[in-house]
Length: 262
Image 1 (cartoon, rainbow, N blue to C red):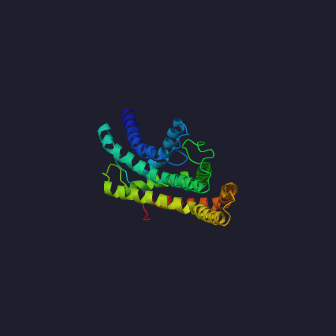
Image 2 (image 1 turned 45 degrees about the vertical axis):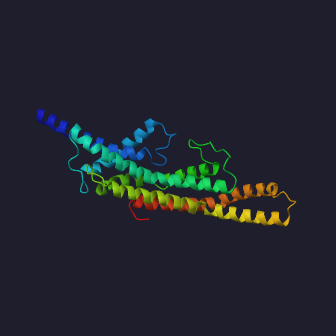
Image 3 (image 1 turned 30 degrees about the vertical axis):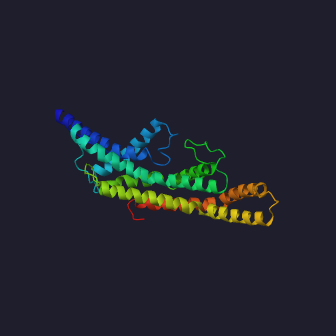
């Protein structure tokens, strides 16, 4: 009976420390992920989601043919040495995914500014973004969840241990270069998504200038304001699905290989 109790105690301690170390990476990633890490999501729900991902990821790390973590930290001292790198890796992966939301917000802000719709319901979200950006971001959240964001996130969490082994020091230079590339890719994606609205705005202003030169007595502002507003909403109706398709494609490519070169 004593031997069985010692065996169970050792197994419980083993899985506890392994789960605690995995929870650091998983919890940091979930805290900034789209959908799961939003400010409107209660903290208890975020903790429950992190625990659920931990239950999924931990067995793959310490058991089975693909296990790469045969000896998780067993004491508080060794756990402290693992805690910081694990948290940084989780935050880096979560921010990499979060940048796609920021790209959609930037695209929505650019489109709203180009079509004079930037002040309508500007504070409807937790973050003060234009209504057009808010609509696109909410649609992006729904599309990402329907596309299996939770499954792809669990896969990234598991595969990240082969790229960033637990307890190993991180290369700050490579991590910084990766972050710079991800930020540059986010701005590039944002401009690509907002390109139809920017082009339409340029053509609209050129046409307005020509009309103003041809008919100086006409108050083109009173005529042009309803036109650009209606045109912006119509363009959002037409181009919105294609913007979301492009955004989803880029997100899925990142989730398939977060370290791929841009």
